[in-house]
Image (cartoon, rainbow, N blue to C red; front, side, top):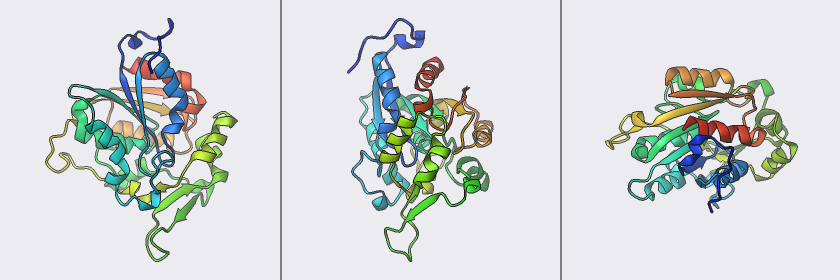
Length: 268
C-alpha cells in the first residue's frame, strides 16, 4: 500500500502518518481520490471514511435517524485503532462536525485535526451564532435543495440534496470539469440527521481531550458553500493553532490537490 516518497517532498514526510479523511455532506470517500494517491505515494497510510448514507456505505440516507448513526463509521474506525496509535484527522465542510465529535470521544488518539473549509464549532449547532457561522446560506441562488420525505409527507424530511444544476456553481466552480462530472454521478442526498449534531463539554461523562488536540484550519477564499466570512467567524470564535489559505472553491481536493497535499504536510 505504501510507496517510496519522492525527493521533493517537505521534511514533514520523513515520518509516516496515518491520515483519516472525512467527507462533507452528500460526498463520500471517493471525493478524496487525488489526495489519497498523493499521501500514499509519499509513504503515508490513509483511511478515507464513508459516513452513513454516503455512496460507499450501502446505507439509505433516509434510514439514518441520528447524528450518532451518521457518524458511526468514523467512530468505529477510531475505536478500532491499536493502543497507542494516533491519527491525523482531516474533515471537509460538514465533515468538521464529525471531526469535532471524534475529538470529544477519541481526542487521545488524534495527533492533529485539520479542517478544510469545514464546520469548526466547539459544541455543534446550539446557538443562533453557531447556525450563522456553520450553516451555508445559499438563499442568493434561490431554491437549491431537493427534499426526501422518507417517513411520509406529514413528517419532517429525512434527506436533502443539492440540485444538479447548482452543484458546479456552488461546490466546484474552479474544479476540473471531469471532477465535477464525477461528483454529479456520485453525490447522494445526505441525512437531515446531520443537522442534529450536538456536543457537550464532557459528552455524557466521558473525559474529553478536545482541548489537547492541535487544530489547523485551511480556508478556501473563493468558497460559495461555506462563505469565507463564515470560516473567519469560526476561526475567531475557536482559534486553531494555525490558519492556512487556498485561493480555491469549496473543493480544493479537486481544484488544487497538490497544493492541498503540500499544505497538509506543512501543517504537521
